[in-house]
Image (cartoon, rainbow over all chains, first blue to last red):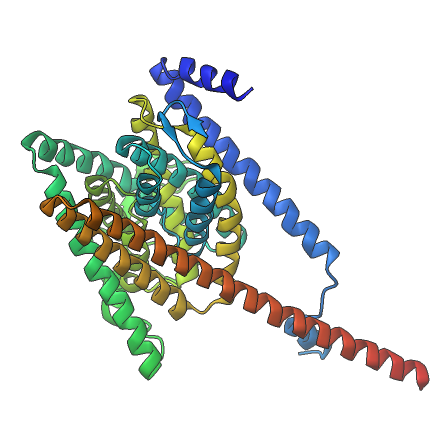
Length: 64
Length: 367
């Protein structure tokens, strides 16, 4: 599979503009996908953890 | 593992480690880390031209992830970022042209090396010096005075621009050229200040083949007096533009290996999350101090690299690369330790609070 991927990339790199656009687009999409993935992980962790009250919550409870 | 585009054999584990270091520093300092990625890839045996091109692609990717993360944390002033980018794009093209002229004259290498060395060393010394002064005297924040005060009050051209031909139901036909930047804490400032700053930084960045984050971040903090967290987020937005422009140009010449970039980027994305999160827990002066140490170290490494080329010494070249990676790795580990310490202390506080609440509830049940 790695061999096939390498050959595909080598073939694609011969078409300059298509190659440049594909490389930039692939990186941008990977960046957004990874951000969404880590964001979901962080939300999952935050939901799983019991939350203590923040100082702001305590102040509003005391009526300040 | 063999990478056919760059025609280099590199261990993917080492690539992932380098990516993690770069990602942590990008999220924490708001710099693209181009100088570090290129240096690291050279040490790992990637040919120079592919190291630079792949580095720029990686800078773009980490900048996108970090900007999204910082935007979520409320650290990006979009108005300021867009004005900076308006100046950066023509600045990058002007810098590329000057670079090409220097290359044609055969003096690009020494000139770029010397400018890089002087810039990194002076910026690093300034920041480390400032950090040491703060550690000794702990002065209060200066608002409205000094350099930030001057930049905020300077008048460049008219305050309002009238465009009667565009006036309509939604647009009054008047553009405010001294807008407020609420996220950055600036009540009003000429829109031309960030645009000119963007142009200058884009010019120098393109001349040096870097993203320019190491110049913009100190300018936003020391020049405009913006809180470091917001300066980092805003600066990263500008790096997306310079990074993608550079990566596109290098890709056109076929000098980018996306497989190397993707492996490094996968681990860097973890680092950027942790680095960005750490900015919430670590105080501003410590962020600037660590950044100063990194920049100063990069300056020393560049100086040693130049000396190695002058003397033709391969050993000295390796020492400079090892210094660059070693100290940057140590800084990344320090950031992760600071984040872990903050997380542990927060978890302890949470446990204490929940124990207190449980004890109160038990008392109420008894009563």
